[in-house]
Picture 1: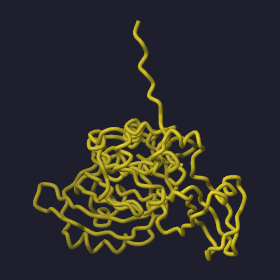
Picture 2: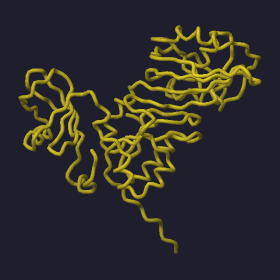
Picture 3: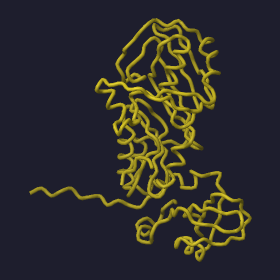
Picture 4: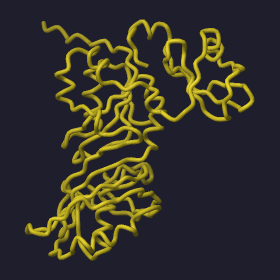
Length: 327
């Protein structure tokens, strides 16, 4: 009689991994592989990338999942490659071509259109998206051949630059870089940009290179992560601390007595000169354990605990201290 495979016991892991997601893998599949590699008790990603897209996908583990909203709301930076002359059902190369015609635009014409896409603009979300209508995801309706009217949404384009333009090949193409607010569909931006010049277009490649304060310099791909060694080595070498999510927030260290008061939900009085607003509260070891709110007059009120109970901490003595979350 075959014995059932031994269940791997999860461990307490707190921090953020900056994954370089490969092309062809869903964000959730990437999340599950990372979670297994770390044996993390809880993990979630902060904003999906389409299977076609590659690049920066922050994976929050443990207590970092409580900070994921700050990454979901952050600005993003992308590099994209666009094929001119054809439109697809999805706005990218994963879709079926529904219209084609020869393109004849010049680089100068494309660049002249950039100003109208800077600042606050309105986009109509694509049908092939995870947005919901009456509880049903739009992409599921699209697969059934159903198209419904979508309300334009306001997004912000902070920076848009044309990186290259290829007019020599059979079908023209170009590459661009964009820094934008959350909720921006780069597929739609590429289509709208081309349409403003009377052209058809779709994305053939998309790579996220920045999210909030994080950039591509500290990303790691799945293969390198698998080759790294055991869980402790991966944690030591590649996890960003919780504080890295909130680099501009004021910080305040408290002693054990004050930490106990905060843990009990009791506001404390502090002597530090602090403006009214949110504060990162660190324990005596320098770990972020509380998000608290200061009233500007000396009272600090606990709002969100980011520590672990003693039992959880004992499972992970080296702990480094919203979204789709895998528990």
